[in-house]
Amino acid sequence: TGKNSFVNYRDSKLTRLLKDSLGGNCKTVMIANVSPSAFCYEDTWNTLQYASRTKNIKTNVWSNEKQVTFQVTQYKEIIRNLQDEVESLKQQCVGQAKIAIDKAKNEDAKIISQIISKIDSKTEYLIKSSQQIQQILEQQRKLLFQLTAKEKEISTL
Image (cartoon, rainbow, N blue to C red):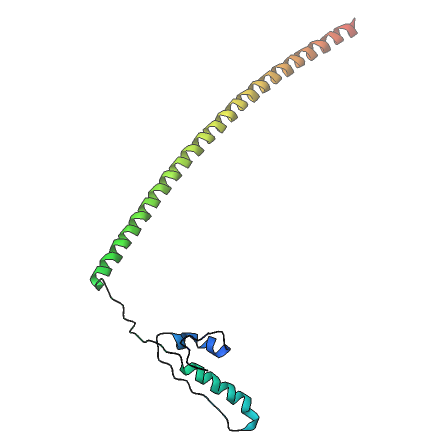
C-alpha cells in the first residue's frame, strides 16, 4: 500500500474512536494484539492492517501554553468593576420598580376615587328615591285614614 499522509477517519470504528488521539496534540502508542491460531487468522490480519495504517499517521506535538496578557491583580480589578456595575444595575432596577409601583398606586387611587364617586351619586339617588317613596306611603296612609273616616261617616247616616 504505500505511505499516505492522509488517513480517512471513516475507515473503521476504532479510528473514529481514537480520532482525537491519533490526529490531535499528543503522542499515542498503539499495541496490536495478534494470535498465532488459524482460528483467529482474519481478526489478526485486520489488526495488522490497521496497525500498519495507523503507524503512517504523523502528528506534530506542540505545547498547549496560553499567553496570559493580564496579571491576577488586573483580573481582580476587572471583577471588582463588573461587580460594581452589577450592583449599580440592581439599584437602577429597584428604582425603576419603585417608580412603576408608585405610578400603579396613583392610577389605582384614581380608579378607586372614580368608583367611590359613582357609588356616592348612586347612593344619593337611592336616598332621594327612598324619601319619595316614604312621602308617597305617608300620603297613602293619610288618604286611607280619610277614606275610612268618610266610610264611617257615611255608614252612620
